[in-house]
Amino acid sequence: MNVPDDLQYTETHEWLRMEGETATVGITDHAQAELTDIVYVELPKVGDLVAPRQAVAVVESVKAASDIYSPIGGTIVEVNAALESNPALVNTDPYGEGWLFRLRIEAGEQVELLKEPAQYREQISGSGKYEV
Amino acid sequence: MVEFGGWHMPVQYSGIIDEHHAVRNAVGVFDISHMGQFVVRGPKAKEWLNLLLTNNVERLEVGASQYTFLLNENGGVIDDLIVYRCADEEYLLVVNAAKTEEDFAWMQARLESGAEFENRSTDFAGLAVQGPKSVKLYDTFFGGRHSRPTRNEIKRIECDLTTLLISSTGYTGEDGFELFFPARDAAKVWNVILEKGAEFGIKPCGLGARDTLRLEMCYPLNGSDLSPNHTPLEAGLSIFVDLQKERFVGRDTLVKQRAEGVKRRLVPFRMKDKSPPPRPHYPLFKDDKQIAEIASGTLSPTLNIGIGMAYVPTEFARINEEIDVDIRGRRFPAVIEKKPLHRKS
Image (cartoon, rainbow over all chains, first blue to last red; front, side, top):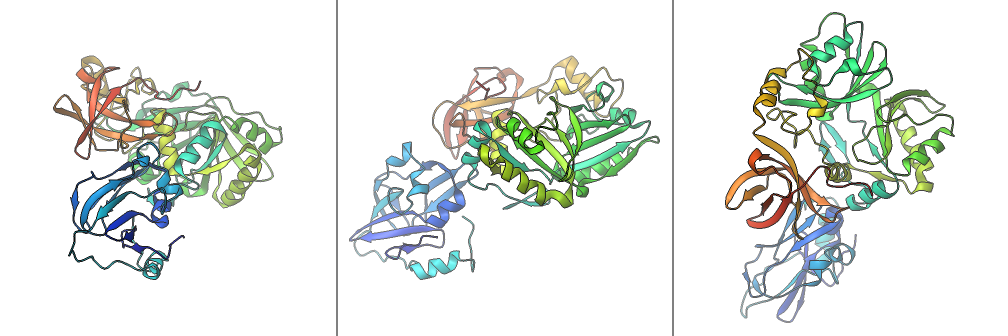
């Protein structure tokens, strides 16, 4: 299972990449493999203010709809428009072209501690596995 | 893997959509060993079955099968099943896994003399091989030594591998066959099917594809589209009910419904535009009034749009009637269509 070293993770299988004040968020390879065939993605709106761990998006496969939780709080500044016509990008490139949304952290905002790659790898290896 | 009717089963192997397309375009194999099998024998077997089932067993010739329902006293569906007449006084019933124990207890409690009734579910494994290439696979599997059973025919074939009961039945709308054989040979037969099917592009298929395939055909699923609170007439399945039979459990309600008309009908619908997949229990609206909830729903891989079925009040149960599906608080337009939603070209 692919778990890149340059990202942070949540126990609910989201990943986060910080670049200055902006964070990109998506779901992990483990998550897309569990869901299989993603057929629809519902994304937040640009300008939405979200709280840490708030359910802000929905990823749907044939068999189930899964809530996606924002790893951190902030303002949505961009969403991945390509997923409207090609939701399968989340399966084929979950850390690249399958990104879901970007947020801007508010200045002075405490960023919640997320999982490091090693901790997430341990989680998905079977000890403390969560249902997606 | 998920729990299903007391069994541990795969939702998918390679992916629901991949498996679905394999069945529509090539061939797929489903493990249906979870289903229940009852054997009925004796001089009164036919009469007894006719008292409990809706279709007419009298019409069943040796080597033929029929789809039928086991009803409760109110005409509601306990289970849908297939009856195969294996010999003059011998019948095989194949029932849903989740209902095996309940069906058996219901029937056992109403057993009449002259009929022997056995639950043989644990003795049987089953596989469903479905898809346009299943015809060629059949010939490869038997080396051309046996002809395919005709539609609804069941044959008993002894081969080196095992002894099979094989019928041209299925739950996908494609050509195909279902095999029942001793449970101890299950892994062996599964492996041989996959090996012989490799040249045709065979794929193992799970519960997910089983559901998308049958829903495109508008075949009902017990527990979603069929229930003890709905009659086969409401489900649009009156062709499997013989009201000319003088007596069977549930007949009174059906006779009344036939006379007065049903108040709701199980109709298929298709989403008009791209939307999240419609799913069971999502509300259906006509203008601003909720009129129903979805019984079965999914994304159709073949049609590439959301589809489903629901029990809709008769006044709205019309082809081309426009309705809305409420998906997590947003309304998406849909339209009622004719069964089946998918037709082979």
